[in-house]
Amino acid sequence: MLNPGNGEAPEYVAARIRRALAEDPRTAELGIQVTVKGEHVYLCGSVASQHCKEELDRVAHEKEPTLTVHNDVDVVEAGEPGEPEVLR
Image 1 (cartoon, helix red, strand yellow):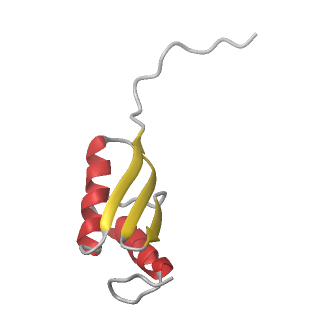
Image 2 (spheres, rainbow, N blue to C red):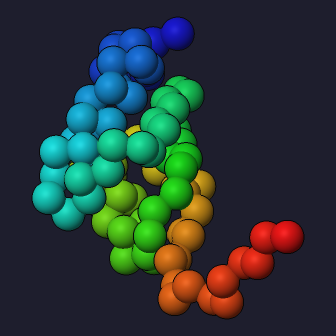
């Protein structure tokens, strides 16, 4: 299945977006899954903050402005450690 916008296979578009997310200093994310279906890009994975999630969306849209980005990335904020776990 080709991407309707430019006749390119979706896996090539997804690879280009993954590379942009890994190389852009705003994101530098390697663990984000990118799937392209038709004119839609789906981002999945987890990041440490809402700001990181928003930057992923921004970079993906800048790389492929004609596609609709669906950002399904979870925000998993690391907090202070709680009470130590006691093993018996």
